[in-house]
Amino acid sequence: MADPVILLDNLSKTYLVPERDAGVMAAARSLVQRRHRAIKAVDQVSFRVEPGEVVGFLGPNGAGKTTTLKMLSGLLHPTSGTGRVLAYEPWQRQRDFLKVITLVMGQRNQLNWDIPASDSFELNRVIYRVPPAQYQQTLEELVELLELGPLINKPVRNLSLGERMKCEIAAALLHRPQVLFLDEPTIGLDVTAQRRIREFIREYNRRHNATILLTSHYMADVEALCKRIVVIHHGRILFDGPLAELVKRFSPHKTIAVELEHPIESNQYADFGEVVTQDDGRLMLRVPKADTAKVAGRLLAQLPVSDLTIEDPPIEEVIEQVFAQEVES
Amino acid sequence: MNQLRILWTFFRLGAMNELAYRVNFFTQLFQAVMSLVLSLGGLAVVFNQTDTLAGWRPAELVALVGIYILVGGLINLMIQPSMQRFMEDIRMGTLDFMILKPADAQFLVSVRQVEIWKLIDIIMGLGVLVIALVRLGAQIGMAQALAFGVALLAGATIVYSFWMMLATCAFWFVKTENILVIFQSMYQAGRWPITIYPGWLQMMLTFLVPIAFAVTVPAQALTGRLTNQTLLLAILVATGLFGAARWFWRFGIRYYAGASA
Image 1 (spheres, rainbow over the protein chains, first blue to last red):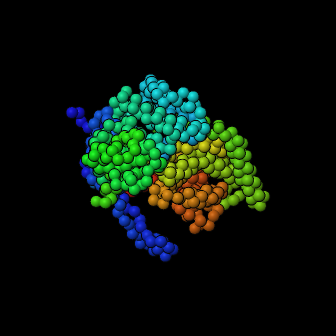
Image 2 (cartoon, rainbow over the protein chains, first blue to last red; image 1 turned 60 degrees about the horizontal axis):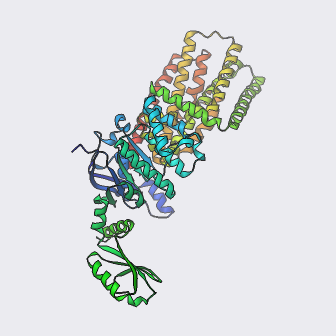
Image 3 (cartoon, rainbow over the protein chains, first blue to last red; image 1 turned 180 degrees about the horizontal axis):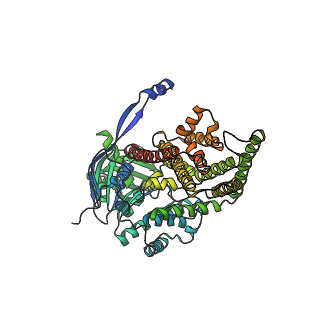
């Protein structure tokens, strides 16, 4: 097996956050004597990513996703643990390292607001010292794949959010990085724009065998792009494996959707399972996986069922459950 | 050298940026002319009363005004806008993009923002300087010209390092723009040779807010007033401050990498 592109071993990051009570007196006191509270943003995280893999990095807000990405791209020093990206220790920020990675942050822009994106691209070309021929080729490819055609000659401020994000992604890829860290690349975009960017990421990965670590709040992104996901919560890794495996492991339930011929009294269906939703002739029940067949049979026998389907719960729900379990334990 | 190409690209971007707002050209031209008229008017008032001011003759003071406008133009062309942008980048989190580029990040943030119309100030400053020199009929020898060049470079370096250190404080305090406003208003004092001010103020303008080195010292070099000791001091202060700014920047970046969320 080839060497992994990303290798993290017990990586931890603790922030010292100044802390003070409410009120003027407390504020004044904090000028003289500051109290700090240590917050473990990332707690002994270990995983590896192989060349060409697209890995989805999931977790609720504040789980430590961005902190991990920032350490991997070299912006932050870990408090402890080791990490390697390609042959480099990221936080040394060696130039050769910076030339082969990129970080896209969906909530932050690097493009200059007042000038066309093509001019900002030019700046990146100079800074990354991309040879003109290679630059031309890369730019043409990106323009084609992202459908940038007329966009790159308009001032960035005149672009829509989706168009701007496409230009941001192009700017981040002009130096042909091998490792892409994408932090919420589709945040705030409409469904069409999200799909475009998703398709682009898949195509880019296919063409260049780039290794991609991606965070997103949109499960559609993850389902479409990532065979493997890493779930992080409170700075710890809860799960690392294929998406289907996550559903199997963390959701001991199935959902049974029932279509009824006519509405019935609620006491007639209450004992079949946990009622998720019900309105008029439709009923959604959550039942333990092992009981699914038995409950379905009883439903068919006892209620005026016109249609019945058994489904895995939506991935969002599974993830929610993963996080909920962690809180209980 | 790649840094020169980067610098040139920032200039081009700055030019394109400003060409989008052409009205700024006229605003800047108006401002520059007003500032010049104000300075020369001030001189006229003074020399109605006296022939020399602290030993400076009228044409010599016009040369000083030229340097004042020139150095002010240099500051406003790149140093001030870049530093302001740098602090904004810290606040907005966009500094990350600069740190992730395979180039010296301090260099990048220092030349990041170019306000191209401030070239008007630089050209006007040079013009005033040349006119003053012609009026002086001064024979400027090689040594004097060289001393002037060195003093000007030292002065610019000192001012840059000073700004850089103040801006770097933004790593800890986030909002430090107000400190920079103080510099802007203090710079006004550079219109006059600092030798006209009382001793305590001279000390302040030399070491606290180093305007003396930026304007008065180069003017002294040009008018044959500069002692070797002062020139040496300027060079030493410039080297020391530049090194200190570099060290402080590195310290700030380390802090940023250790603590920022």
